[in-house]
Amino acid sequence: MYIEQLYTNCLAEAAYYIESEGEAAIVDPIRETDSYIEMAASRGAKIKYVFETHVHADFVSGHLDLAAATGAEIVFGPDAETSYAVHEARDGEIFQIGKITIEALHTPGHTPESTCYLLRDGSGTPKAIFTGETLFVGDVGRPDLLGGTMTKEQLASMAYDSMQRLKSLPDDITVYPAHGPGSACGKNIGKETWSTLGVQKKTNYALQKMTREAFVAELTNGLPTPPQYYFDDAKINKHGYAPLADVLTKNVHALTLSEFESAIKDGALVLDTRDPDAFEAGYIPNAMNIGLDNKYAWWAGTLISISTPLAIVAPAGREEESVRRLARIGYENVRGYLEGGFETWLNAGKPVDTVTSIDPDKFADARAAGPQVLDVRKVDEYETAHIEGAKLIPLAELESRLAELDPTREYLVHCAAGYRSMVAASIMHRHNFEHITNVRGGFSKMKSVVPELVVSGEEAIL
Image 1: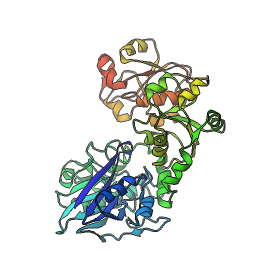
Image 2: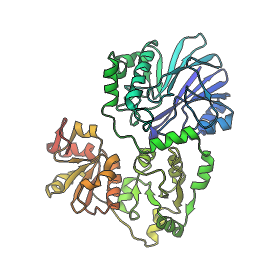
Image 3: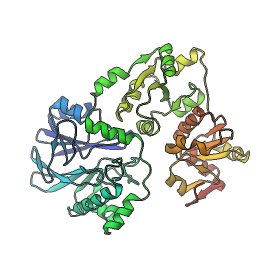
């Protein structure tokens, strides 16, 4: 028996490769399937099943492409109701993989079809459970992603019953969830990407003894607004999608300068995927900066509508990556990328904007001059510690809340380390905020440079 977790940091997503006696299964694959196919080939195994723990909302799953390439059978839990042929497992149904078995345990709550897969070794001993978004390390899947089809309270009540079922399983079973820290599929997912059921019974709030009413209240309170693309991706995964190879063939397309400018005139948003320092030094007016070296796809899906046409400015050699990682979340309306990158624009003498930035050691003097400090971190980060007098607007909410800000005022914008604040600066510039100064290194550096300005503990959010 062989199990390997295949983790995609930019999505905080875990897929799994399971193998026994030359037969393999993949649990919750991402859209790029080559790694699974290559792993099976290198180990002399044939992929027999693709197990989906539920209809995913935060990425486009690779189950269709993987099944087409390998002949594997796609397995969902009960009531998945997809628009394409799958095997809808019965609760308790057993699947054989070599000498091991996988039992489908219907555990609704995150979604109605959510299903965990319990792995038993050749002797029938439970060894691992693949929990999808039913159970995370330290958390449980959020119940508010059905867009009104069912209420979050109804789903949370289902999740309560599912937790009781999981609590009945042996403590030494390894828990393999679909997500780790940074995913918005839970409220506060722990740092580890796997655990044991025994540890979770002791430390995970969702597995503690409480009434159904208390559980529902705990699970439904304090949920952050889900990224807008979640609802789009759930539909894509339920109804099907074009093969990834076809998407890349169409979208990984070099545009001449004139073609790029035509795309902009036709309404394309310039998405600059370079790092914040490069963007700061010069960028195409009205471009949005979302750098590749962070949660690129997640932030693109959070801040940009899936229908928005995109024209990409990428670092040299990373043009295809910029397109492919968007396709992971179903963003396929890409007109192409500027051939030669930003240098092509610059060398043509086209207009260029810049972002003013300061280092943390200049922050105190800059603040004393009177600008508003704008903190674009998350609420929990702000409540832990923040700069005295800072206004909090999390980056995910910034564009929808710009009416709260005065475009004629000066702002000192910061996040935790500098990635999100540059995204924020690019958004504000697009909306005619001209007096923006970005603080390099963000709060992680500011708190040690200006500790006298740091307020710790929960404070009223300004």
